[in-house]
Image (spheres, rainbow, N blue to C red):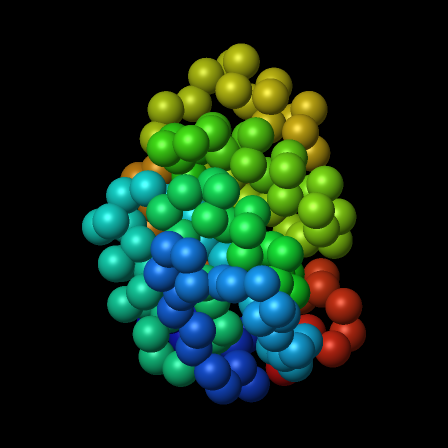
Length: 160
């Protein structure tokens, strides 16, 4: 973990790793004091890498492989930051992040994609997505972007 991520997330205490279908009716979690991060990526290697990166006990996070799983989780979890890939098995990342905004308008939304075109840039802009990360993704770029977003979050989520 990079020093910046450690300092930004140092008050976080619990790790949550959710596999497909783990959120059930009536399982709404109480609001945690640290930022809640959701990752959605269909690539198992990316999901495993994210788990390893955040598996140090310094962040609350959820990891899903499809958009529908992530949207279902939003019904039961208070999420602050959503990071997703453009290529999902059931919808594209822009569709997913648009639906995230409809369900939870205050969520910061980050899109990751390997192939970027002018048309995709235009769609990202129209959807009002907060940040875009071009893959291949580096830990440093993810660390920087999440830290920037955490700094702009509500006072109860700001890290020292």
